[in-house]
Image (cartoon, rainbow, N blue to C red):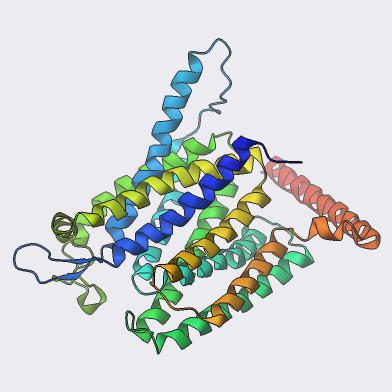
Length: 377
């Protein structure tokens, strides 16, 4: 079935804003400017302040939701489902996971390339799959396990590409690149915990997606903004690139923005793009499919990589191409993109139907067991 103009618009919006989000964050990291007082010119390295900006973008989704709800109530026949009432504190644990994962990833982005940053985020499939088996009682089918193994192979190839390029990259030391890659993978562990928490405790409530994203953004924005104060005094030595060598020097960041206003444009690009990206992603899932959202997210990685090459931010490495293709194959298998192709082969279609029936039966028995446990308690 052909896409409507609105669906094409949503897909394009998700692809463009998702790419801008990572590229603008990396662009900000590439600036150098004078700081406060007589500080010499130094790189703009303020990952935690950038994370606050990202949460501000997520928080704007909550503002949009209530504006939309207000206008919808004025219609003769309201169409927006605001969802049931819920305890906002349900979103606090996943919001803290989001805050930690995002902060770690922005620290890592200072150390590695934008394309590797985006590719290595594919590791979330591995940890989400394993945690969903351990804590949600989910059974992964054979294709999903194969997808996880292929994703691990893809991560090794991308890491190897960074190791090889690290010897020829003047912008980052090899130790920084390796540390950055490891931090990104660590962040995906935290992100997978966030996803499992959301599925176990949040998704069973009928909460509008924009409201959910905005509520998490509200918690993340408040907590991380407050944490900027103690971070201003925590000495971390050479781990930090700001003159005072503290965990986060927000005053230095604003001084640098004053000396080079283009940094503000990059930060605003990051904040605004995350708001539109979340809206577009939610809408694509609703209007088209979750599979389409996954495909667009993979295309976003390709766009970021191509743009980074075009802007001269990084060099071409054949291993990265191979790593990207392997990661794409792993994600496709994990998300079931192979099923429409196999469905055209008669014996494969019959086997798939049998596997789906068995999985559905296992899920039913599992749910029955949970209900019985609740009755017993």
